[in-house]
Length: 188
Ligand code: GAR
Image (tube, rainbow, N blue to C red; front, side):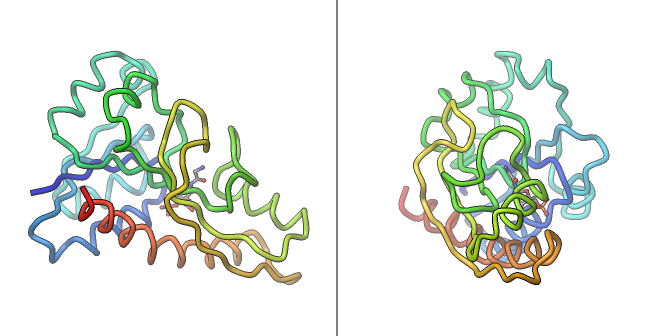
């Protein structure tokens, strides 16, 4: 059995897509969902799917024992699906090459601290970009910096709002994120 840990701060539509994708795969389980927000939608998704969840505050997240807590779940991958805090260096070191993030733009553009969710789409539209997309990448000690695993593109039109672009980006994410995870698990 291969285990996934998902870190998520928000609605959790990517977490849901991952759970759904592996639902019929007896070899892969989502063992834990970690959130930094006690009212995050993703916690309801965890409860609905009988997946253990953990709400962390900044102090426990950055405590050196947090890596040990995660090790208890022996994850093949830790998946950041809309998670907004920087992963502590101790966790990055403990799970080197096993932590991946999804970003709703084509990195290295529109990345870095403060660039998440709608802020990203607003910036892309303000810059009159004709193209945006998603980036799935390894997590290292620097925000949005680790090696790129996959990018997928979509068009941005002059009529797009941050909402309409977010919807197009979410479709790409829900398709490519579970499949990229599957590919990575198979090549381990
Ligand atoms: C996703 O679009 C993800 O790419 C983005 O947050 C959204 C979460 O949506 N992540 C970032 O912006 C990270 N910098 P969800 O909660 O519906 O999965």
